[in-house]
Image (cartoon, rainbow, N blue to C red; front, side, top):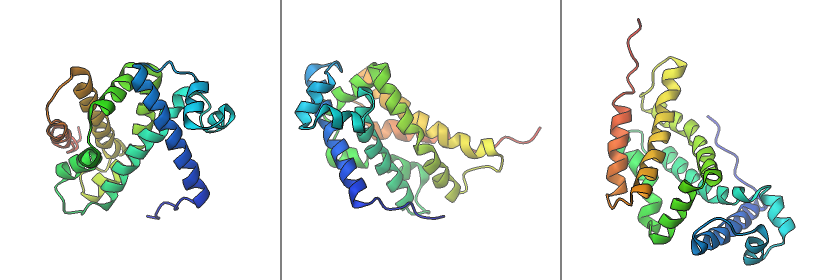
Length: 202
């Protein structure tokens, strides 16, 4: 399997700018308690022109994509670097919580995610980026021989894990739960992986 091409310096700088704009937008959204801030206001706060904003984000709702994608890329990297003999559930939990352990998930992050979950246009961006995790999840499960031979049996567990992860985070956010997110994810992954054995033919 070929390794993904490393981004060029220009590509890295472009992504850094996109993330900087995204962070300014999120700061405004959280401070306002809603996502109604105009593109003009976001661009001014980020120190860029509206033209630059539109060059990177065709519509305002796309501004959160870089943050979701950065989190997704962190999960993918953790899965690809994990030892093949690691216990699958614990590897999955670590992949999704390592950023939380280092950066924490404080009140600011929780308020941001609450806005994303409760605003359909922004939740859609979360869903779209999450779908990009499925290929990496298939590779992870395949290396551990946790997939069947049928095409559906090879893809369904990966999609279920990604969906289960999002469901756990949405439950945790909407309910205001103070439960350990790692424990909630661990339970969800155990439930999904317990059903990865393909059904007998007939």
